[in-house]
Length: 273
Image 1 (cartoon, helix red, strand yellow):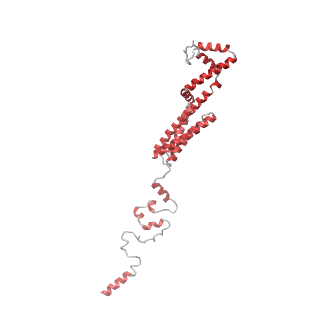
Image 2 (cartoon, helix red, strand yellow):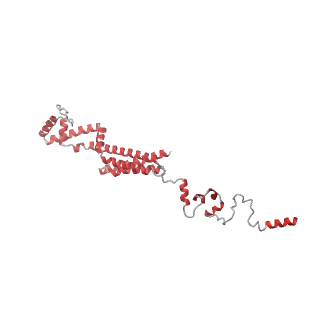
Image 3 (cartoon, rainbow, N blue to C red):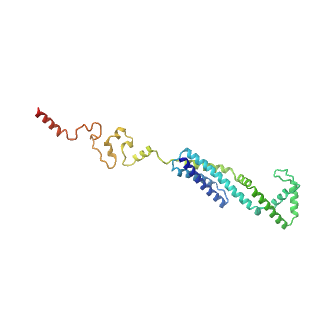
């Protein structure tokens, strides 16, 4: 049950962190690394709150895995957003060079024999043809080429997302992921609930004290009713008094018996004699 609560709390914290991270990236246009660390912090806090701060190594590792997974989901989400923006902005960002390469790709005589997949001869022919076109023809061709490219990108949105994801990766991502995982591990593994003996000892050390058994006295002393005088509200036994419930206490004579009853008993015995 505790593990299920830790899982739910960690996922809730991770989801909140991812939403915050993607929102900041979307509205600012920048992928801020320390916000990724915040994903780990929120994940760890979610686990810790769900288990009422009774964590351990296992809950810490669980929060660490959830934080890393949440950051991965966040990276993929932002890559999808970047791919969607790139597809939507094809027309606005379509340049003359893009139009020339598009023309070269559609050249019937083109032979893709270089690293970029374009025949240099086809590119030269496309560039020469582009120079002979008027501005009006340039605008019309760019618009047509941009529409075709947009349709191709929409049909291959997953591939565009992968490309955007790969381009967004950097060595700094390892640093932010490591810090997020460490934060989640530390927060989720803390345990602020004291054990029973520690709790009793802490209370016993307070001003006023408790029963001596809580202060480390022996078992015999703890069973002695005279020691109950340390508890507030109970009278202390007089020094040297025999405990009422001590072994043999009932067989002993009550206070004052040696002075009153004992002499009379001896006197009556003498008279009877």
